[in-house]
Image 1 (tube, rainbow, N blue to C red):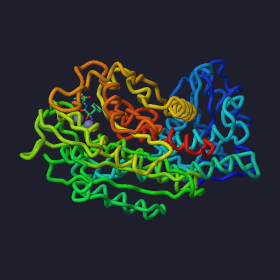
Image 2 (cartoon, rainbow, N blue to C red):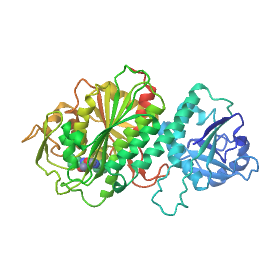
Image 3 (tube, protein in one colour):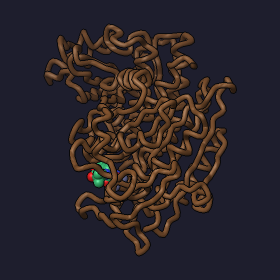
Image 4 (cartoon, rainbow, N blue to C red):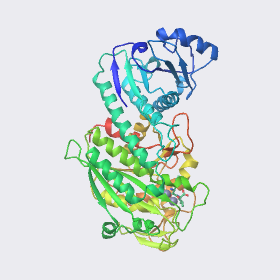
Length: 499
Ligand code: BES
Ligand code: ZN
Ligand code: ZN
């Protein structure tokens, strides 16, 4: 994605289309700020009765010989409901529509990216660039005939501004870097489990780490045995593909500081193990690696954006299969922390791999640990697909993350980890068991994980099971991995002053 600035006005900026965002209320061609382009678009808008409903896009041919071939209007919905996520989705919808008509460069009015500057320009630009990148993305490497979905980047031209100010320039750079990283990581996240075994993922992450300048450390199965990560190992033992843990380190700009650990559940396929999942819909469990993919994207971005604080990206990688050596319901393992766990349901595997990974993470003496995991189906019952679940042991950290999520359209919603829930995982034959009695499934997941985090380390758990992928293509995004969680982590790390 090329992002450029020009002093030329919109209709002379050289984009194949002029992109204008509009609110649904009080919509008119005037409100759309078309300038000289109103001559062509105005009558069209009147005739069709088009309004700026969210996700609606109008691609209007201009028949102009010198100006843009199209005017692209993107609806933002009602002004009172506006938030950065809606702007991103509108930008994505516009980009998708434009792409279908082979329009791959968009000019925008730099000084008023959204009507009335409902968002300050740098923030608006960040949201728009995320949307353009998301709208241009498609995963088609396994489609033999590529003609239908040619992968093509979309360029953005900011019109009416000779030179961007420092803030806008920063947003442009950030947009370009994040778009590149997201496309690379989504290409891994969208791979089916046969093409993304733990060892294949390891290779791919190693390549990315090298390319983006991070150090790479692998704990293979032997190392995990040595480290007594028995809970993690128990998850993988029904699969022929051995597990591993990857640590990517970005040293930060101020080296004395304690690192932030971003830890992701990376189950390359979750069959449920001996507690086998039903067949219907099981194919979606190739996306059970999305926590790790979000942690990866955010860690790479931190390095490329040269953020202040050191970051360690940790991927706990395993495949959950029901092979002959698989863990059985009732099996008891001693986790790395020393706690014993009764594995009553082998499908509650994410918390088992994270238990040991959290212990490993704590050894870095981090200033915070944030884990991301497609941990429970229950979070989809609670929150649907509109927000990820947020839990943790430090209110300040939770507030910061929720705030960051809101600011960039990657929302989180809190659930409590009250001590009262702890009884539910008391073990009958071991210290704890890996499932509760059945209610408050998402909270129980969080309660279990908390057992493996020292109280002194601020920790947050993001349950992204409802947000990590789309099960069909939407106007604003392609089916498949979304990297939910990565955006808000980048926002949090970039906008938060160092501790
Ligand atoms: N990966 C699943 C959670 C999941 C389910 C994510 C559906 C996205 C969509 C997780 O490992 C799992 O199977 N969790 C169980 C926990 C239960 C056994 C306590 C679940 O949610 O049913
Ligand atoms: Zn499971
Ligand atoms: Zn799982």
